[in-house]
Image 1 (tube, helix red, strand yellow):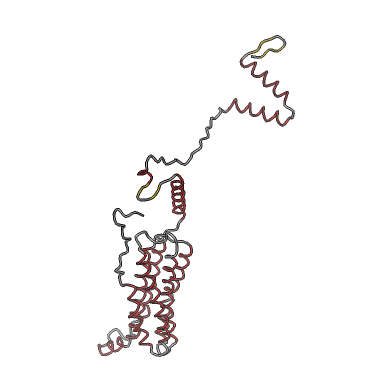
Image 2 (cartoon, rainbow, N blue to C red):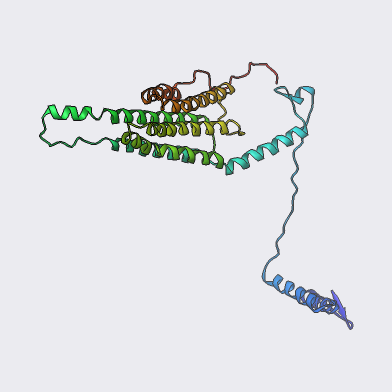
Length: 304
């Protein structure tokens, strides 16, 4: 309702007269334009109603002393809020953590290629197609050094693949450091066909077996570094991995490359003995860990 010069105005006319007077009272042109535009947009678009609500951490009601303890742990408002924050942090880390599936897939591919390339060192004897047995048999027997080197290299690669596969059965997730250690491990694995070729090409030297043994040793150390890093990271191992299993695998992965390191020095004394040591030591990667991987459940009724 508006009254100007004794005349009464109502409804739409009164509203516009009031707004005209209001604009005339505003001190600056900028404010007048802003208010006028806001009113004009109000005629086109409907108004939105927004309600802001605050969420608080629910409190834990403690009705009795029996309700205060759940499995021997005192439940208070502070511990409830802390557990909620830890759960939120775990969920956030789970969203951005790296899986191990790509590592296992790359491992299978690299080992398959490297182990296949080893057979390329074996060549058919250069004999006529209709050669008699007396010529073919001695020619095949002359391949026994390459066959022995092929067997050692192939079995070594297979043993390292088994060790890597078993290790990642206990590893739950990966990170960038573990990816870098795997790249180092795969680099030495892919070098195995070349080091085998060096041994076949220079069998009468001592440098070639040393180079081959150093390649196997570096593969073993790269495998040990992966496990040594994984056991020191929080939540990187699976929940079923026990402390006994971690320590036993750690000791085994440390002992084998240590023995291989000293075996490289044996090559300067006897190449045959060093190759025999490789065949005896490497299968230890494949021995099953008899200790239980599962965490032992606590006895019933035992309080934390």
